[in-house]
Image (cartoon, rainbow, N blue to C red; front, side, top):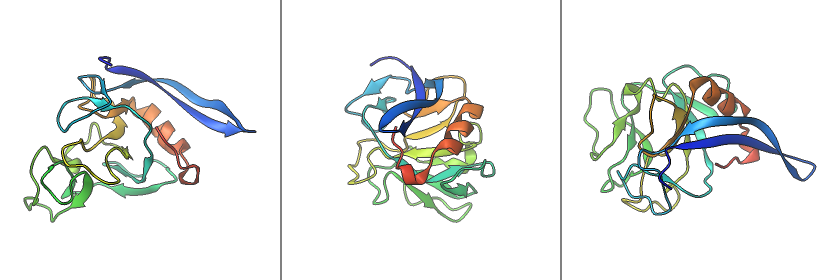
Length: 172
């Protein structure tokens, strides 16, 4: 539970059996390991099985994914303020405007290194519990552990994001 490393492997169904599609990719996890009871700001990656969000985001152009893709721009935030009514969701405010939420919320467009492309891991997104944790993504590695996300080398991230199919209802 204290590790900051994992192996990410993609699997597909073939004739009722699971078959490895790609990977064994070295992934990085939260700086404080894994948790089955993640809390906002604790630096852990939540354990469990979670859906992949319907929209991918990125500071770079769409790399050829099959999901809806939003190119990040000034004013694109992930609300990580547990007191906010839009906690744990993507929000856009006018560029240069202070958002109505605070906490550890991050301007996603200001993070080109981890977010050239990302997929939202739907942790605490359906029936959101304030303080349970927010902003869990599959994104690019930056040279160390994450603050709760799962990260891959950029080329591997792109390969995985291109491989994912919305109709398959992928999970991680």
